[in-house]
Length: 326
Image (cartoon, rainbow, N blue to C red):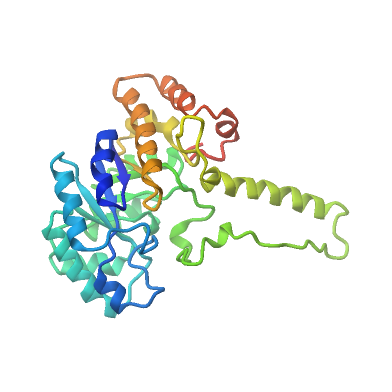
């Protein structure tokens, strides 16, 4: 299992690798895209400004630095879908990034996967979690299309991942490890977050029970709604908070690392291209400290105890709202 870290700036490469990152992924929004496409047409699933590199020269620098440490770089092209008229520009971009040494493209649009394979571009393809691969049959289909790695959706349980892994489809599997939850299945959510996630919008609601409804139905609804808001708060990185050591709170799969190792998971994804450099470094350091215990042969219980001790937020862990694999 390798530790996969996000970046959005050239100067993050060395600190992330020194902290324990073994794979890197990033986004790129070239000037040609900004100049020719509509403002709402995002090239990937993060803001074109704060979460992406800008220009092939920056990407080349990232790849060069990472290559010196034998760390591969993956590039996101993971919008839900692209227009036919955008394909020539995207394919040209794919050729250019392959030429500078990017190892893989992270893609969710099947038409783009097919276009890259038909264009015979020499680059690996990782299926984005937006591809919503949840079973062995869909994994086999994506493998036939030329996908080399599948990033599994957040909502698969450890048991479901194990069943999928046991099917022996010839692909690698990547799972979520830290940060950024989603209340829904993001592969089925067609919003772009351009105006903010709809699930995180603080909607104002006025409960009006229908005639004949139970007397306390409004109270029950309010209770459930408060619980749901708490769930969303945990998914949203606990309000983007940190513990007293500066380590990030939020969605987490650290306690399941021993199980993931036993199942043969290939990569552990830390989310947060748009996060601050300090939050990214803290996430990598937290994950690597626990992963080191797995690699040292500690028991699953000892690994989980280590994770909880580092977090030192028992009230958040006990809620289980933060757990990817509860």
